[in-house]
Image (tube, rainbow, N blue to C red; front, side):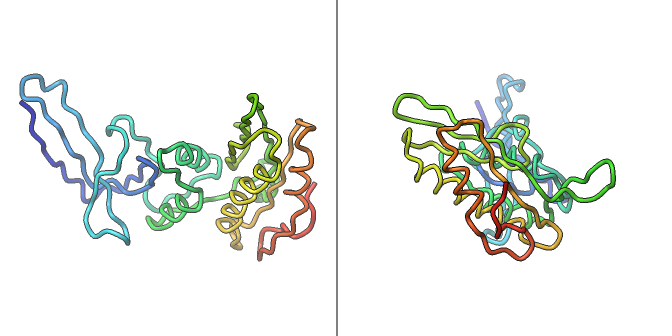
Length: 220
């Protein structure tokens, strides 16, 4: 026989990623097997934030498989954030970088740009290397693991307009995230795939009005 217990964790400041959301864990739902306690399962309960007054159970993994993003109020690097953006894009209902960033900010956390080891100055220019794989009629574009920001797109092979539109939409999400005095940065795309150089050129030449990101002039 199984029964359910609720473990309350009201003072926990741990932010977790589960089921396409970043939220503070405030408890755990325990599914206890009376005949075999080793089979006990636990699922995180997270704070509802500004939208929900009560805690809720996100549609994700068990507690032991749920990644910890950071502590509430802590800042993380764009590369660390990119891991959760990639996860969010692969959920049954995809989550955007902008949505995840809003959840991070709602819990008092934020991004912090890395610095150069040589002079301790903030790094404000980022090259995004894109790999594009064609599979007969379909194609997949994604940023490499060396990138600080994650991009991906599924599209019909040779549909350059669709690829451009998807990447531009994701780029604008990042621009809305980064366009502050503290986070202002420039993103430049690159690929070794000559068949899609026109898409890269369009992305890098598209003037984008920002206050701090220096994205108006063509980027090389």
